[in-house]
Length: 386
Image 1: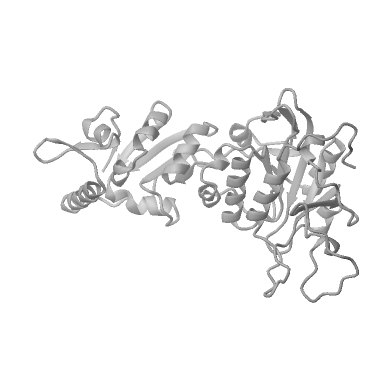
Image 2: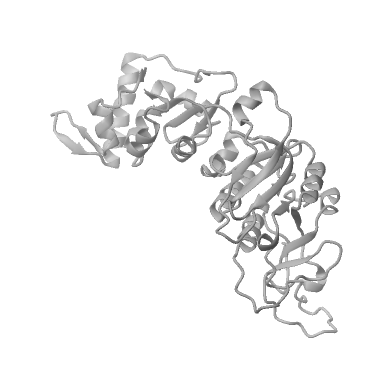
């Protein structure tokens, strides 16, 4: 049975606060054992009443998406970038510690429905069988505006500009037509945009978004083809971060990067550290004495192995795009040819016994973004990075 939630109802409000009335009408504190007992009681009631099983959740609009899980639903409500339609809360969600916070955020923004076990099949279908914690949010799609180029950035005002591609009327309603985006310059840095090309695993894409948001990356761009979609799986893997960080899509990655470069952006390609910069493997001949590395993140010129100074800080000097490639093959040659610089992570072992020569793309993106966003230490007057 579905019913519109009455926020002031005693049963639900007290459950949200972690308390309820027992059979003798005494107020008790909710425990995990109480929650399990409460759930079993609801299941028994459902069986006795013979409630009709609901196979799927209804769509308010044809474009509606279902966001599952407490954290993902709360993030979407907090970010307020979507049109919110319905929030379904199963009775098992009553015992969730954050229920009161979710209701406080959702009240007045979305139609809240409390449902019973007859909705479990519909919940499992909406979440593709993944854990939903008793929470499903129906909302419009995540805004992912199409771009043709990045334009100028302004450290003082913490702004960067974009050029939007053409959109249909329906897409315009979802994505809007905003062309200026704010970022936290902290008074010293240009924006860092992460371009993820050929990342086909939705879990990896979501993990990239989670790390990017946490570390302070200012936006993510993905191509419309040869890329995982921003599906509910990716959103769940992002732990809600994809709801908050600006995400864009481009039709032609090479055109986007070329035009952005001409607008003053500098492009860094994630790539393997050149052999000359790797520590010598055990037993390998070497004509030079190995110098201990001063950094595990190595910047080089795009068309040579010449290293940039260890103090090099991309975002201190210009608006920056970091390109990350596919999980297995890395960046395509056509994209590598557009890079101004390359950046790689030094192998941590002198001997690679089993052939593990790279990191997972989401892990590599995390390490590189962290390094690129570090504020450089004060340098002596007159010192140069190049």
